[in-house]
Length: 161
Length: 113
Figure 1 (cartoon, each protein chain N blue to C red):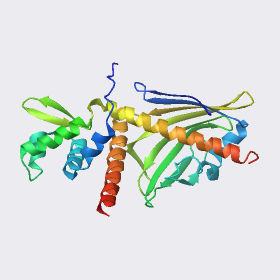
Figure 2: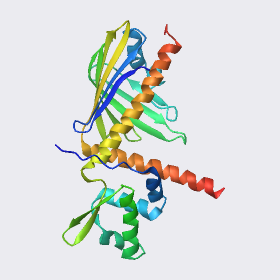
Figure 3: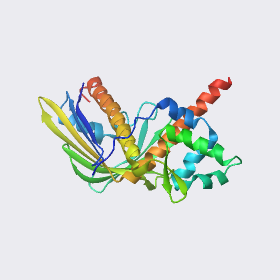
Figure 4: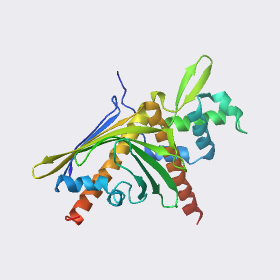
C-alpha cells in the first residue's frame, strides 16, 4: 500500500496526499517528466491520456486529452507555475474545449507536488486546491448528469434487447 | 464557517430520479438558474401538480432542494454547493487512488527505466 495518507478538507477545498514509493526520487520524477510515462498513469484505464504538449519549465504549458470508451475526447491542460527537477512541481490544472483552449468555467485546481527521500525510497507529497465552490459545483453537475445519463442510456439499451 | 454534513445520497434514488427525461430536463434547467416550480411547469405539457411530483422525486434523491422565496418555491441544485464540493473532492480522491496504484505498478514493472 503506497498511499500513506489521503485527506480532503471541505472548508479549504483541498486534497492532501502522501504516498511512498520504493524507488529513487529520479525515477518517480520521470513518471511526471516523461510524457510517455505520464500518460500511462494520469488517466484511468477507461480514459487513457495522451499528452501532445509537455513543457515542464516554469511558465511552460502541458496539454493532453483523455479518450473515452466511445472515442470521446476530453481535453485538459496544465500551466507550470514553478518547477525544481527532480524535487518539486507546481501547476494549475484545468479543462479545455475541443480545440485545446482553456475553459475556466469548468474549474481549475492548483497542484503542488514535492518529492523527498524517505526510508530508502521516495515520499511524494501532493496538495491540490480547488479554485472555488462554484466551479466544483459546475464540474460535478456536468460529470454527474452526463455520467448518469450515459449509464441510464446504457441501461435502456440493455433493457430494449 | 459551519458546514452541515450533506445527507449521503442513495444511488438507487439518484438513478430512479434520472431515469425520466422530464426530470433530467428539470435538473438541467435549474442548474442554469434558480427557477420556481410554476416557471418550470410552463415549460412542459403537463399539469403543475405533475411537475411538482417530478421535483419531489429529485428532491428525495438529494439532487435539488426547494427554497421558499415570497409566494414562490424556487428549485435549486444543491444550496451553497456543499454537496457538490464534497462530491468533487471524493471524485478527486478516487482519481488519485487510481493514479498512485498505476504509478506504483509502473515503478515496479521496470525498475531500471
